Image 1 (cartoon, rainbow, N blue to C red):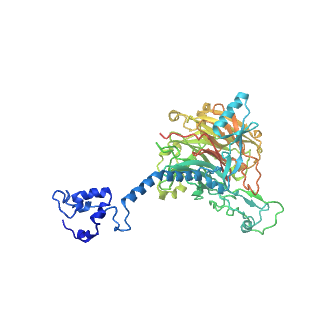
Image 2: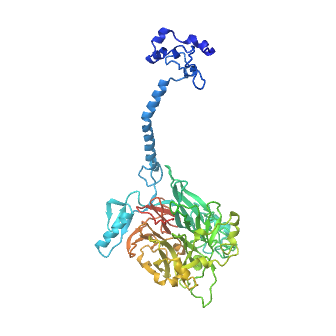
Image 3: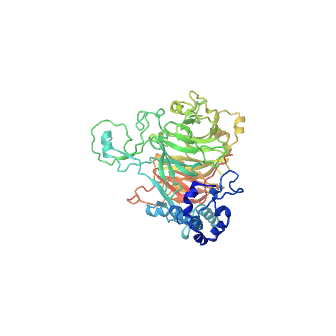
Length: 630
């Protein structure tokens, strides 16, 4: 076969003498007549099955110095690949080690070497007290239980107290200046002059935190904590650590989460003329004043708390056969400004009303049938394993608008909305009109057929939690005995089967009377038992979800304003107490928390607590009680 290419490059090949000095492999190729003279045609090998000639199989000699300088020899490529394969594991190991040191190393509870360059979290409690038992054996049992819950420092032991291990203590991870507006005692300053004189130095972003809930995002493969703010028109915040070397931190999850329309706000001196207060914290809250000249006040101004028309409680809707109960796209919100419970659809963002009207739990009916009434302060959203929604409602108008008044008949009730997970969603374009609906659907008022009254009380319901057996409900009730005293009682309710409710001849829906034998007192205390009862007369101290249950059944109760009491699941005796340290507010700690407002478990190994303007956490060996999804 003759080729112009071979003819033009034939003189480049070295002479036979040079070829003799080539490698043995090249000599062997010279012995092959097919490669020794590729221009000679061989009938048996002139072409392959595809018709291509042997020219494609010709290889350039390894010692051809006339080749292009940009070409690399096969030998060098082979050597470089081998060297890379031998040391590739070491490079991967170095990268993994660096990532571990950056994200998990370090001495701070934030984790990672980068935490050394950031300000450490403010520790507000460093020990947990062991409760005094009837005998030494009871105290040892309580201590053993506390050691199974918290990380205890083995090298230190205080008298009747266990010191928490470093980096596992109660610490403040988010803190905001208080949302308080000062009011002149003579109340004669105009709004503009009041704003100019009393504008805060730093603008707060928290108004009154009332509850938290954990949400697991299956797409991200991790979870985050949602914080409900009941102050003003409400906000839902999001706290997320993330999977990288730097904490993601706080972000705004939902604006105006409790009040949007103002249709259900009664006109008064605090709320204004049926309008939702703005969330521009610090200088937006106003009270109605007469336009007079501002006179100098002889006494100090008094603080005014903003109205509570935000979101008081949150819950993740159960999804059948989900990986965990917290893995849900829909979030339930208790809206105080709209006086309803809605489900925020994860797909469309529409707010589907779940509960707006409930049976009237008032005992003083005088033989008359009470009409369903609209919710006033829905709170403590809790799902059962069967998809029923448990919630509370308290008629506390005088508590919020004025102050504690023992002569006023306060009352609270626990309700059950059956099969709340099966309520169909509304369209996104109907979400705005739904604010004015009296029922869950437009024009439907008779909706209390699926709502039962499980429990009623003359006090204020401050917390609810399911027991570890999924058939017991614990309810925390606070009742005033005098202007400076109160009692806190934890009731234990046995949730009855739905079949019993359907077969009952009593159509009043009053489950408190039907199941009276199933309601027992689990724990009780008074204000005399608290050493930190320093918030007497503050009506806002009763706002929040103050009861939680862990996976072992232990109860966590905010009984005293600045302490968490742990109760044994069997008989309700006190096991231990986690109390805030006596910290004075200073330049170093300008917002030291003084009271707890809520407590709940996350799925990241922490027990979370809130004050009105702080988010705190402590490392825990146990997690919260998880609901089955099947």
